[in-house]
Each structure stands twice: as structure tokens, then as C-alpha cells.
Image (cartoon, rainbow, N blue to C red; front, side, top):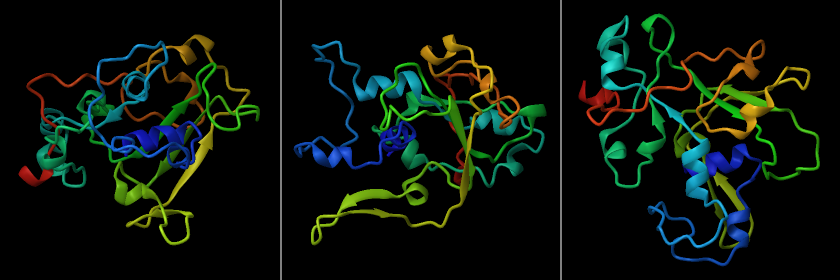
Length: 217
């Protein structure tokens, strides 16, 4: 699901996966093997380098202005976090203003020089932000599948969500060097367009850190 979100942010409508020959692992979440013999960047490596998930640690919630009682609307379940396929290496702690917990559902996308998305020949904004109600779940964003009876594609969503896409104006000054660096870089391109409510880059989870698990509070 995380890979599908990343691909969608790059302009992939989700149908490319179904154009390839089906394999038992094509849509699995198994860890990548280490037998790479080409210089082509693997999808897993792209995720590690370019995609970050911001979610508070138990410690951050406990030390927030409202304390643990203020974390009831921020949720991840222990069974998800402890799953062997959960992308824990992508998660960063959320440090927001004045120790106030944030409940923002946002995506910040910075277009990288030479990035290969669909419709590359079309002039595109240097970046964009999503601001809305959808959290990082399949229930919110849906699941693409192919209808066996019609052969067409369908997207199944279990939640009603709403959001807006806000492009960064082309006139916005952009440091070109930040478009070719890692996912933990400067977010200044969004200044004047969408406020970035957290510290970027966010702290890497320590080995002793756990995410805020509101059901266990």
C-alpha cells in the first residue's frame, strides 16, 4: 500500500502493475532480496531514499503539552507496527510547534530532476501538497484491483474522505540542488503555499522508541 501511495505521487495511476506478467511476488510486501546485479534503482530503494512517514513516538506524545490524554485521535495499532512487513525504516518522529500534537493529514511532494512519472512531457509544478482527511491506510485511499468479470479496473474505498491538491507555483524560488538529494531535505519550496507543521527532517526512531499506540494507553 505504501508503494502504491508513492507511485501515485509520481503520477502512476496504479494500472502499470497489471500490465506486467503476473508473479507470486508482484503485489506482495515481502522484503527485497539482496541479489541485485544491475544499476537500476529498485522500487524498495526508491522508497527508502525518497519516502517518509511522520508519526509520533510514545515519548513525544507523553511529553506533549496535552500529554497522553491528547493522543486519542492519533492512532496506529500494535499489530500493524509489529508486522514483519511494516515499513518501520520509513517512519520518523513528529516534532511540531510548541510541543502541541498535530493531527494533520498531509502529503508533501517535491519533484526531482529527471524523475520519471507519467506525462513527463507535460509542464508540471515543481511540487505540490495534499491537505485532507485521509490517513495512511487502505481504507482511506482504496485498493486497485481488476474486475474478473469485466476485465476493467476498479478502486475499492471503505471510507469517505476529502482533500485538496495545492501546487507550488512555478514562480516559487526552488533550490535545484534539493531536488536531487534525499527525502529528508529542505522544505522551503512550500513557504508561502502550504505551512509545513512539523520539523523536517524528523528524528529517526531510536531502538528503544515505540510509536504512540493509543489502544494501549
